[in-house]
Amino acid sequence: MDENSQNITEDKPPFLGSWNKIYFFVFGELILLIALFYLFTKAFS
Amino acid sequence: MCGFTGFIVFYGAWKTRKTKNVDNYLRTGKSSSWWVVALSIMATQASAITFLSTPGQAYADGMRFVQFYLGLPIAMIILSITAVPIYSKLNVYTAYEYLEKRFDLKNRVLGSILFLTQRGLAAGLTIYAPALILSVILGWELNITIILIGSMVILYTSIGGTNAVNKTHILQITIITIGMFASFFMIYILLPKDISVIDAAYIAGKMGKLNAIDFSFNLNDRYTFWSGIIGGTFLMLSYFGTDQSQVARYLAAKNITQSRMGLLVNGLVKIPMQFIILFIGAMVFVFFQFVTPPLFFNPVETEKVKSGSYSKEYLQLENEFELLQDQKRIKLREMLDESSRSSLSESKDVNNELNKISTREHDLKNSAKVIIKKNNSEADTNDTNYIFITYIVNFLPVGLIGLLLAAILAASMSSTSAELNSLASTSLIDIYKRMINKKGSDDHYLKFTKYATVGWGIYAVAFALLASELGSLIEAVNILGSLFYGTILGIFLVAFYTKRISGNSVFIGAIIAESVVIYSFFFTSIPFLWYNVIGCVIVIAFSFVLNPILPSKENR
Image 1 (cartoon, rainbow over the protein chains, first blue to last red):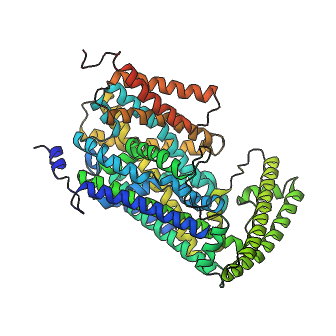
Image 2 (cartoon, helix red, strand yellow):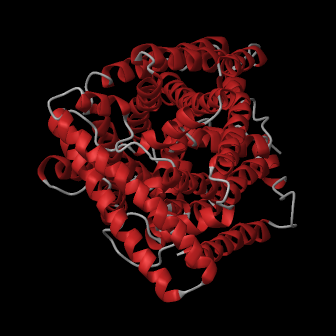
Image 3 (tube, rainbow over the protein chains, first blue to last red):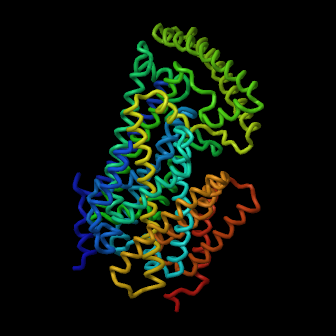
């Protein structure tokens, strides 16, 4: 096994168990931020 | 300021002085952890001009600029899924190396030359823009400021390579963060004692500065939710996926996991960070509701007009502007009282009067700009970049001014060092080692890369010095970037997301795209930002159209 393929097999996220869950978490934060920005804009406009 | 800036240069050079081979110099021997990658990515993107102009953007136009970054998390996810595994699997040093593995040599050379042309000039601008602002505000000699910033960056970047860039990025992003929070804290100290945090936010909101989200679909409006999500995703994909100054940051990671985590942490942190910086700008706006701001924030141009033949007209505008500020302060306090009493009709009356004052204020500023332009036809009438630095220098205590100036210099050095490092690595890997000298020793290549870093640094400084004499070159550099960026993105998108498109068709598609973009530049009035879209779409379209017609390796 060469170094590169070793890198691929080590490809496990340090948190949440799977990459899909991490991607969902990042995307979820984006949705949450958009919602918060909307409320922020409405509250102070 | 001098102490911290000197320490960064010394620390970067000293800690990485023993870098002994090309892999260590260009990719830190693939030893960086995800948090180093994340900080380095953020420090590379946060140039001094971003640090200086973002709060000014909120002051002038409200917080809607935050929408520009909405596509960033999506781009980070897409790149983590697609680009990172590809780069990691092929064990490349530069993004353009991948183009030869996917297509052929000519596409690699085309991609790297487009990058070197664009980024080489942009590095000069990264040094020039903050040097100009610092010299205007602090009275420093511009050319000396340019040479000073350039020399410091060249010193530690050429000694330690990517390792020095990453190590200094940690310190630089730390001082930038401390600086921003310190200025945020100071605004509340400096606001009138009877104005609370909520009052300040209320005023900013009523004056239209807390407009973080706008769902309206308007192609003429630069910052909306839709332009941020759609246009922003493409722009961030291009910047983080194909620009070597960013690609080098995550290629230095220990493994694919660390690269991905670095990008994704950037996706998590970037928008809140920009929100805070913009909120600081909105609070600076509130501060200047209670302290009369200059009619025009660039002190050099103001001084010129006051000592010129339009002095009388300008002073008249200044007097009216000051009277307007007094009226506005009375109305703002009335508005705060009305808000506590929640009387809707009276509150509307006060708001209407405030709107009238704001409109008159806006007219006065525009009139001032017309006079400034009449007085000096070369004058830049956009003073947004000078707002935050005016607040820092005129209203913060001495120690904090030093801290924030150190943060501005740190931001300038952080992006410039990453640019010089990526220019040198592309010069070595994609040009010199690939086409000129294939059989050199590791030591020879290491020396070449160090000389290339110094060479690109001198080139950037020389361009920055030239730009100070030819002001219109600045706009030319921005246009130059847009002339190439769309084509590069198009080549990479075809490479990432198609399997059957050959090198010949994408190369010809890129040449056609570049020709159309250059034609648009010379013979049409299309705004230059659209060149990015035009170039990208034409590369993709022609790649698909030409692929069945043109011979490819497989066909032969």
